[in-house]
Image (cartoon, rainbow, N blue to C red; front, side, top):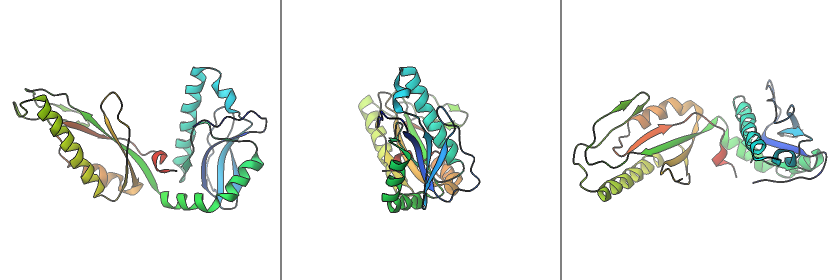
Length: 232
C-alpha cells in the first residue's frame, strides 16, 4: 500500500477526521510535528515535507516508521473518530490533498458518520493441540476448557470438532449487533476475527463472549483499536 512520492512539498497523511476539530492535542509525527489540513467538513492529519523515500532507506527504519504511523493514528483515535490511512499514504502537495478532500467530501463524511463512537476489536481463537488425554487447566485472564479424557478418539475427530466450534462462534457473532471481518490465517493456525462495535458496548460484549463455550479453542478479545479493517 505504499504511495511513493519523489518531490519536495509532499504531504504525508495519517488519517481523515471530521471538522471543525476542537480541543485535540495533535500527536508527534514520524519525524516532525503533525498538522491539520482542513477542507470544509473534513480534516486530514498530515506531516508536511515528509517523503516516503526517507522512510525506506533501511529495513529497520521502515519498520520503525510503520510502527510510528500506527502510534499516531491510535493517539488521535483516543480523542475523535478517524478514518485511518495505509502506511505510506502521501500527496504531492497541500493543494493536491485539498483537492482530494474536496472531491471526496461526501464519501469520507459518510464513512466517518458510520464509524462514529465505534472501535475495532480483534477476537483471536488460539487452537488447543489435540491430545487424547488432557487435564483441566486455568490461566489468569483466559479460560481454558478441555475435553474430558478420551472424548476424541482420533485427531481427525478433534479437527472436525474445532471446525464446528469455529462455525458455531461465527454464527453466534453474526447474531450480535456488530460487523465482522475474518482475517487471514497465518502459519500459527490462530483464527482472527475483527469486530466493529460501539465503544459503549465493549463491557457487555466481553461478558457475552465469556459465556460462549469452546472446548478446542482459547478465545481472547483485544483492546479498542481504530477501525483499520472497516475502511475502504
